[in-house]
Figure: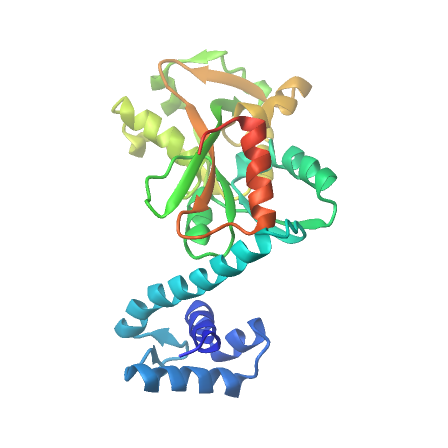
Length: 298
């Protein structure tokens, strides 16, 4: 087998389509099909079930996929090690960030990095923390910044700083500065999607005090911070968000901030990488910028 066959296999598995895989790696569909057929003959096993509308992995294909990713990663690591000797920091860097850091620290980090390395461009992906972890594990991006800790041994995690969540509301609702946890039952809540680190941190803090989450009146779930803020401003409900992110809205008087008695809503913001992947020179340079700015230890 060769790397072209393995890359074809990984992309067909990812997109569940021979044509989409061909477009991604700039090969013709017959060439992709030929690579897969040759690989199946060499392994003497069927890797894909082609009977449905989507091309899906067989059990053997699922088992082989992790090995295939490791093989490509080993090749990329070798190339990265060699290229790092030249110190060439250029090209496009994909950075995945959850909502809170994307709206607080990421702009400043990108600005500082581009001043130092003007030949680098960025593709910033704002995703939930869960989706970022998944993308790091699948090698879709090298660096992620998320709002919760992870104990996966395939992930390297570095704490950047501690963030605090607060309750936000429309000022006209006249919520007090400090609220008893039992009073939360009196309000309608607008929350982020379930894969959001902010929501998980809020729910875990409530569970630590044996609060029944089913009693919360959740009137809306949204997957976008701007939408959440607009709904809160409209008085539809209250929400929980980062104190850093809502600071400007509090200062302008468009949102009211309250804290919840006895509820620990502090959580870490983390930089994550794959423990199975060697960073490219460009990603490593960004990693070092974060290390210098936030003074974390490896």
